[in-house]
Each structure stands twice: as structure tokens, then as C-alpha cells.
Image 1 (cartoon, rainbow, N blue to C red):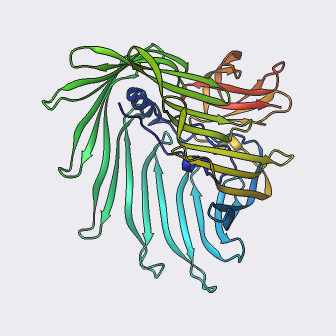
Image 2: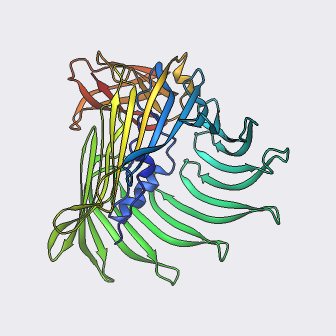
Image 3: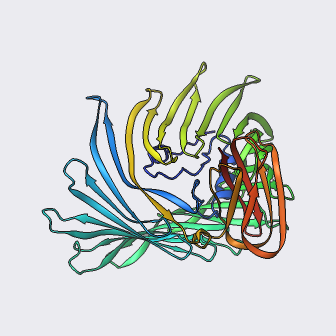
Amino acid sequence: MKTVFRSLLALGLSLVADAATAQHFPVKPATVAQLRQQAAAHAPAATRRGTSVTVLRPGLVVSYAYNDTINAWVRPKKIVFRYDAAGRTIQQTERDSATNRPFNQTFPTYNAAGQVTERRLQEDLGSGAGWENANRTLTTYNAAGLVTETLNQYDFLGGLGAGWENENRELSTYDSRNELIERRQEKFQSIPRTWRATVGTRYLNTYNAGNFITEQVVQVYRSATAAYADSARILSTRAATGEWTEAITQEPNGSGGWRNQERTINAVWFNYAQQQLASADVQDWNGTQWQPAGRLRGTFTATSSDEIYEELVNGQYVNASRQFASYDAYGNLLNALFAEWNGAAWVSIIEVRNQYAYNPDQSLRRSVASVDFFGSGLQLAQLSNYSNYQTIVLASRAATLAAGTVQAYPNPSPDSRFTLLLGAPAATGEICVFDALGRQVARDAWAGAPRTNYALSLAGQPAGLYTVRVQTAAGCITQRVGIH
């Protein structure tokens, strides 16, 4: 089995002052990775942590890259932000920090749900001649808030009136349950003027009576034949509440059928909604029967996750691969690690470490990112200073939330009381709150007139981080909150 790694660089070097959304990165076993992709494929964009009715947004970010040859911070870049009344970026301008010479500027446009529908980039013509359009990205959503098309265009002839020319696009199709059934990338050809598929994946889903996927055939697009071909099949056994407890991955056998590859059994979940798997056993197919191959063990808290895959070697379980992530009290990523075992210690494949400094009002003042590739040692990578904060009072934050999302304010709370804002009215719902050890500390439910907010009190609970799980007809949503 091959270990699968997903790049952390963009996550670790994020310039955004908002807290990073927790991610789960696939490791062994492959079946777990496939089912995680299945669970995440139809999820709407996650809410940002730390948003409240009164928000702080940085007006200026100055960033530097580190040059390890001369041991100095170089290439200072200044990014100036403008926001609308909902606290969303409406203009982002990049300039040389020393000379103030502009490089480019970006203009996002939003729909009524607060989702970005257009992101237009302009470049500086130089010598005070102004700006010209360079490219733009148009994003289309369905009624559930899921992305159906991402279209990239460039300004033909550099703003001389020729208009926008298609470049490439990604199309996503969903079934009536809003499960992803196809994602295809296409490139636009000028002669003839038509779209040509380049990469694609199709999912043929089978559901049980509870509307949970129990079989998924994965097909990949072959450009040579301009057609889809079977790539894998995942069979899963589900509990009544949807959690899978056993799953089998199969590959085509070359004769129109399927051949067993890998089986994951005895799955025990720490938190299924967040795809946090506490333990599972992995088996390989030897051609006639299943044989033990390894096991997955996960340890989770409100601020960290640590997942280790162990291989069975000569009757003994030994470390094989590991993924670890930790966050600070504001939900910002502190450390993310992918590592493999060399027989004596964990050796980093890629590791990102972030350090943060906050202002007295808890706004971010500085972040420093370090990166380690293949155990070469942590190297400074990026420094960002945040300033010129703007205080924005949101008139109605609930109106800007996408369906299937929830936000809490104030977060963190100084008095253990929060208001939960729901992205869509819900006539029924259940709220459960868990402490850092995963213990349930509060539970409540409602039924009756649809509501868009809920008053949550954690009075009597100690300071720290908590996970709030909201279950409505729109689905299950989680939000981290803090008590200071």
C-alpha cells in the first residue's frame, strides 16, 4: 500500500488572519482516504472560526520571505484590504513595501449567501498608466450552496476592448441527495472554439434505505479514449446513523469484474461528523482470503489530532506513517506534520510550524511560518505583520451565512454565553457540546417555529475549548468555541 500525502504548504503559509479550517489529510489505509473524500465531496464551504457580530479585519498585511543564504527576510510585500459592511474583502491590493509600487489588485464579488461568485485580478501597467484586467474566476453554486462550476478567463489583448476569453473550467455535478457524482476539468480550445475535457472523476453511488452510500464506483476520465473507465469500487457497511464500520476497496480485474484490494474493519469513531477515526484494523487480499496488514490509531482533543498507521511486520505492529495537527485557542494552525517511521524515530516528510502574536483585543499581530521538507530541519519561510485593523459592526450576520453552516458569537466568550447563528431556518434541531476530552457537557433540542439563532450557555464550565455540534434537517455542523 502506498502512503498518500496532501500538500500542507498553502495551509501553513496562509496570509488570512481568520482562523484556519481544520482539515483531515488521508493516510493509510487507502479505504479510509477514499471514504473521507466521499464524506467531504458534497460539504459546503466551512464557516470561519472567530467571527462575531462585531468583527476586526486587518487593513494592512506586510509579508516577507526568508532567504536562508543570507539569513535575512527579503522581498517585502504590502497587501492593503478593503471590506464591505458584512466584513468581506472587496478589494485586495499588493504593493512593494519599500517603494509602494503596485503589483496587482483583486476584486471579489459575492452572492446573497456570502459566497464568492467572481474574483477579478488587475495588474499595474507601470509608470502611473493605471490598471488593466488580467484574469478572473467565476464561480456558480446550486441551491444547496455547492460549487457547480469554476470558470477561469483571461482578458484577451490586455484590456483593449476584446473582452474575456475562456481558459479552463471545473464542472461538478450532484445527485438529488447533493452527493457528488462527477467532477471534470476542461480546457478551452480556440480552434475550434470548444471545451475539451482533460481530467475527470465520476462517482456511481448506491444508497441504502437510510440514504447512506453503501457502494461507490469511481471512474476516471481517459483523454486517449475520451471516455470514463472504472478505477475503484468502495463497499461500506453503515450503522443506522450513517457511520461506516467496515469498508472494502476493490480494483478492476480486467474482465469486467472487481478484485479485492483492502478491507478496513472494526472502525471505532471518536467523532464521525469530523471524520475522526479512533481505531480500525486493516487487511490485504492475498488472492484467496483476507490477511491482517495494519491498524490505524487516532488521538483527538479540541485542539489537536494525531493519527498513526502501524504495519504488521513478522507478527508485530510497527509504526509506518503519522499525521499530526494542533491549533491554538483561536483555531489557528500551530503545527502540521506528515511523517514516516525510519525504524527508530519519526522522520518528517513535510512539517509546518506557525507562531502567532496577538494584540490585547485578540486580533492577530504577527505570524511566522517555518517549513521542513524530508527531515532537512525547520527553515524559516514567511513572516507576516498585521495592522490597521478595522472594526466592522455587522447588522445581520445570519443573513450572510450559507445554508448548512453555523457561527457562534462572541467567540471566545468572556462569560460562557454564546449566540449560535444558523445559516438556514430550522424547525427542529439538537445541540450537543463536548469538552476537550470528548465528554458531553451540555445538550438541548428544540421543535416548533423555525429559528435562525440559539442562545447557548455553558455556565459552570471551566475556561477552555469546546466543540458544539448542531444537528438540523440541513445536516450535522460543528463549531469550536472558547471560554476565556
